[in-house]
Length: 208
Image 1 (cartoon, helix red, strand yellow):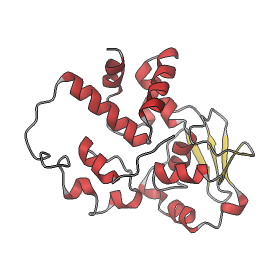
Image 2 (image 1 turned 30 degrees about the vertical axis):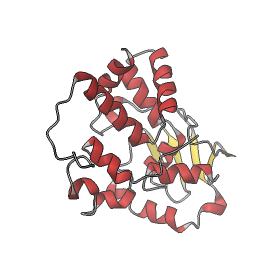
Image 3 (image 1 turned 120 degrees about the horizontal axis):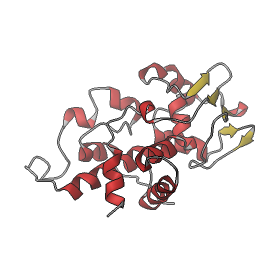
Image 4 (image 1 turned 180 degrees about the vertical axis):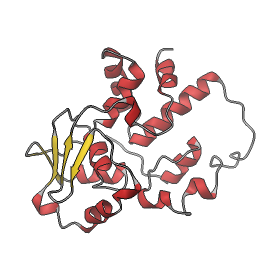
């Protein structure tokens, strides 16, 4: 599966909000959105008119970039959310939050989802005692995610845990920092997602 390897601050500027793709940098004055609060490119500071379709597309792009998914992955997630009971938009956000790379990020083992994805791909985490190296692995209630014994001396991970206070731990997760273990207490709800997301626009886009 391909992945974006370009400048991530450019993506935040394009969506006009912080997507927290750069880890610690997003909390400093070096943040691209803080320094240049307008879209990238030579026409970034021009006045633009956005249609309803444009608003829907931008919302989809924002969420897709926030969670680091490619178009095919996002479309599959949207399809699964539509087939589930309840509101499709809320189901979509719940599915994205339950990805293993996102759970690792939320627990504070990494400062960004991209970093969490790399740690998962390199086999640093166990799920219910078994090594899992698939970032899209979907956790469920009662799942235990633990950093492997041989990976607990990695400086980058301990540094990330040390600055966890910058991000609040979601209520549906529980962290045991001494044992490098996290527990999924419940499935994430819409109230647990504090980022400014209008999921109904995404549903409308895929309903066209």
